[in-house]
Length: 279
Figure 1 (cartoon, rainbow, N blue to C red):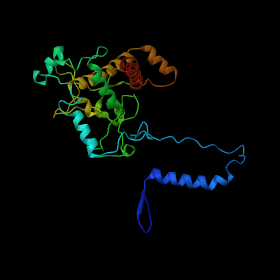
Figure 2 (spheres, rainbow, N blue to C red):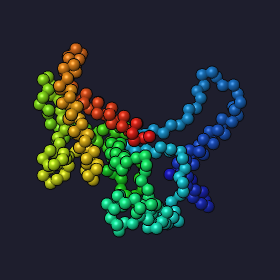
Figure 3 (cartoon, rainbow, N blue to C red):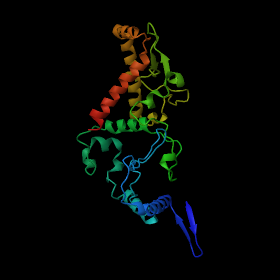
Figure 4 (cartoon, helix red, strand yellow):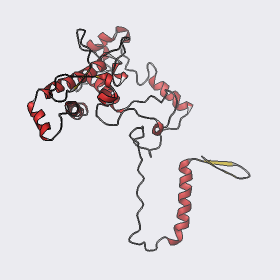
């Protein structure tokens, strides 16, 4: 903030107003030469582009003004929208319980099912969100500059919420396959002691995974296990393919089963997003 004081009052300029005033002053100084021929080598001003660091959050439209300035009236309007009986309330019969609300469609006439998507799409969307964003610094109810908020996930569909830092940085997630003839592939640890596969867990029951949010509910945990199991199946498949081993040998490389399995699973994941989730 820049303050300009005179004898009568103090005027405070924000950053945008300060830059605008500087621009107007520069334009006034350049006005006498306005209209004169410019040299062929004169550079044209380029539009300003917002810079978003990969390890930070940002704004999609940084130049777009806010919908409304914060005020008590605005807060009260938002409370009215979200309160029971408000605009966002579907007025479901919550006293009937979650099972009946799912199986008895007559109880959700104001909140009908989506005819084009199954309920699992919601949880896959949550899985995708966990793959792109992870903010441990911000706190609810406290305004924060997104460009100063660190993002612990990479802003791309690369499954780093599953793979973490890889078998060297996060070795507690992995175990060797023990089947490779040249370089054993690396598999994820998966709990198989119960009736169904489960996330690997410590003695206190905490999930040993790259992103703890993927154990928030049974559906998201099941999705995470499915990706762990798919990677392990790809490792088995690659280790049983002589052509893959031979092709690596011809290139003079030891077959990197882990990297190839990760690439194949990431491709399948991205295909699902483009062809199943986004449409």
